[in-house]
Amino acid sequence: MKLNELTAYKDIAIQCHNFPDADTIACGYAVYKYLLSRGITAKLFYSGAKKITKANMLIMIKELGIPVEYTDKLDHVPELLVTVDCAYGESNVQHFDAKNIAVIDHHICKHQMPPLSEVRSSYGSCSTIIYKMLLDEGFDIDSDISLSTALYYGLYTDTNSFSELSHAADKDLRDFVKYDSQLITVLRNSVLSCEEMGIAAEALNGCVYMSDIGTALVEAKPCDPNILGFISDLLLQVDTVSDCVVFCRTGFGYKLSVRSCTNRINASEFVRYITENIGSGGGHADKAGGMITDSSSEIPVPELIRRKIISYFEETDIIRASDDNHITGLSPYVKQSITIGYIPSLDIVPEGTEILIRMLEADTTLRASSDTYIMVGISGEIYPINKSVFAQKYIPCDELPETEQEYPPTVIDTVNNIRIPLTDKIKGCTASGGSKILAKQLTRYTKVFTLWDPDHYLYGRPGDYLAVSANDSKDIYIVRRNIFEKTYLPDTEYTN
Image 1: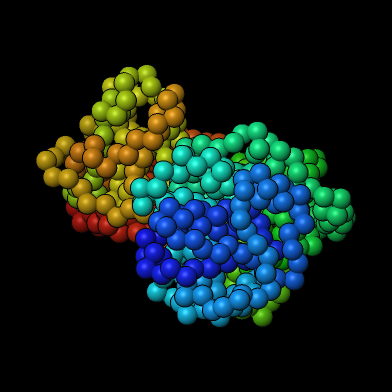
Image 2 (image 1 turned 90 degrees about the horizontal axis):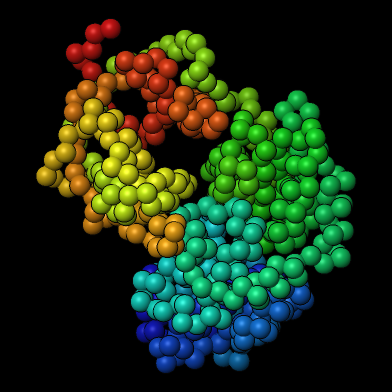
């Protein structure tokens, strides 16, 4: 759905979810401002059992001049009702009749969505969805500091102070939107109430410590997501706790906050494991968050989370390339001569410039040089490669690659804070024929600590492939199943 499709209607109401947070208010305000720019005055409101009382929310609404109202009934049936950061028919949205419905949300929705809907569950906030939709419309967000500040704060609160960013688009909103820094400072320091301090204390008192794996598990009463992060950060300061999971029930399901202070667990990957097939999650190596929205299991969600944590450790193998590994069941494969992309880093920025490679789920930083290229894979994945390694494995060609990409390959000039799309700079290349490996499909979750980065691991799921260089038994890595099956073929000419 595009925002301009809403302008086919003139009588529009915009509904935030019950017990509104900053994300839903920011999204409602953004849709309101967009419609106003198109000559349509819409009603912005929320409903439910209680009016807003949290200090940070009241300050946000007042200082940014957000015209949101509380109502328990509409004076007429609107031609179009737009729900933001929530879906019509869900339990956390007061029901109101409407002739037509539109939905903008980042949660996994249980009900069938109307034709007018934009749901992106991989995004960390609904504010990010609105941000991207406004950019697609050519809307100048930064010309309205109240709007840009609202969207920034909506993302900030929904991702626990940016510690749980789950998508590259979230990082774009964080990095490039202009905002009122003084107001954000005030809002940051107006989050905790005395009641919420009591919730944190009670939750910590009920902590379950799994001493055999060094993991702490805590359930808190329903509260602001930032409180979960506050509890998580306190838990990690306990000398015997190396990682923790803190969760609470919300109107959408269960919100999780995950922390890790060792390289044995990447918090982002850990929360994705816990929420796999029942929700979503993401973040950083040390801090991450997620949502469980599917409660159809006969097992209560708190018990389900506990079992998932235990199974994570029981069902995961660890391989360190520096050890003498005796990996069996490997078969020979050779890389296909399909066209993929590459870009010399000096085609992007001058030599010595620090650039951040923005990938779908992670960022990495390097300095541009004549020896550094950037590869673009068949799924739009990008990664750096040394020029000499490139020369050994690939041959430049005139054909341009065709990639499937959710997020266009992008780098950021960190000195000038400029976002540089790479799509128009990509050149084509094919494998030279010398890329031979030994591989097998994984049947268990697997972590591989590589030689080139022994402090962090590559994570493979069942169905992915464990790969070993045919020329170096210590060159061990993981290849995603969808990428492996498009780029490798059995090597019928292999001789050991």
